[in-house]
Image (tube, rainbow, N blue to C red; front, side):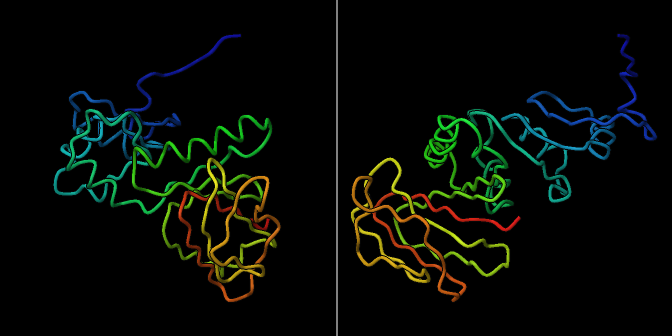
Amino acid sequence: MESALAPLDCLLPAGNLKFCLLILNQPINKGHFHCLWSKAALRACADGGANRLYHVTEGSQDSFLPDYISGDFDSIQPEVKEYYKVKVDVIVTLGGLEGRFDHIMASVNTLFHATKIMPLPVIVIQECSLIYLLQPGKHKLHVDTGLEGDWCGLIPVGNPCESVTTTGLKWNLTNQMLKFGTLVSTSNTYDNSGIVTIETDKPLLWTMSIKI
């Protein structure tokens, strides 16, 4: 089978090539950058590539926000990391809760890893399910968007939670322990107040259904 491609189509103002733009930690040609950025379907930086994007767009960074920044973040400059970090409230992952059970548990494990490398919360969504790892402390969840399904739950994955207190659920907890082999909060639902509060002493997995 013969394939056909015009490699420089991506640099033509009227080109029809559909592409994603990945910016690496290398000098950027401004002319190429503006043409490619304006046409890219998705824009991402690999680690120190965020430095290059930040500096080449100096004075107008808010107009050139990447869709993704990935890597081990060993070469991104602290001020650049801080700048792009505050532009995002949460990271949403689409997929990861379907199919093989060990893959699902790997997605849950990734939520624990994520807390060590970035301050942003991570939400995983798949079809009618959502999971979100709550850190120790107090949390307020707004559940009045109209997209909430019928069920929700609190799962003590990774460790027992010695003390969990909630409001806004049909079956609330008051300084109760959540632990596999004793009590796990599944098939819970809401009390129609529109807000769920959760206080936990250990990481605790929140899960909820989504109307589809």
